[in-house]
Amino acid sequence: MPSIRVMLVDDQVLLRTGFRMVLAAQPDMEVVAEAGDGVEALQVLRGTEVDVVLMDVRMPKLDGVETTRRICSEPNPPKVLILTTFDLDEYAFSGLKAGASGFMLKDVPPGELLAAIRSVHSGDAVVAPSTTRRLLDRFAPMLPSTGGQPRHKELERLTEREREVMVLVAQGLSNGEIAAHLVLSEATVKTHVGRILTKLGLRDRVQVVVLAYETGLVRAGGPHQ
Image (cartoon, rainbow, N blue to C red):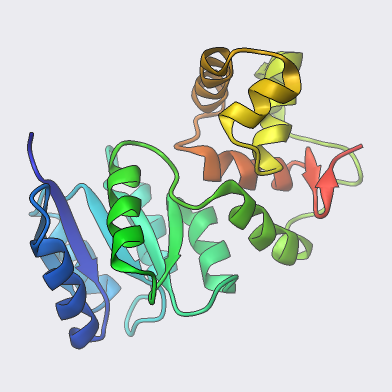
């Protein structure tokens, strides 16, 4: 099985060194590139095959949010995992909107960081949906007003059941919890989530949660009523 190719983007050399030591000890991971700022990261990525980028947010020249936005706008981009110093950082919120698959705290235990990298690589969002929801509850006032009604043309592509599933995903429920709530099999819920991602052109569950807030389908503190 090929190794997960990881890129470290952080202006603190010592931090990159620490992460590199942790990753180098893993049989299924290798650090293939490093960069000290966003400009350098974009240059390196042009000539390097990378699966997952560990992205700092506060860097000189080009911050992690704009770097993430540019990376995710490319065809077949690597997954981006935002690293932040503070939980519920507004930078993490912006990073999720820019296309990151999740965020982690810089002082996360090594085991959790490794699990997050593997999860992102396999196509899952690494941020627990409930954590994402807390983040969005805090920053929902920054989102555009929908005038009290969910407004998003793409949502019209969803069936009524898919909209139900989307609301529950945005509320932080796992597939198993959604299955129990709607009296469906977990496999059926997984199929619905897959269709939601495909129909709305979304990368993962994190983007489902963000879109649910942006469209007014879900509001801070609970689902749209």
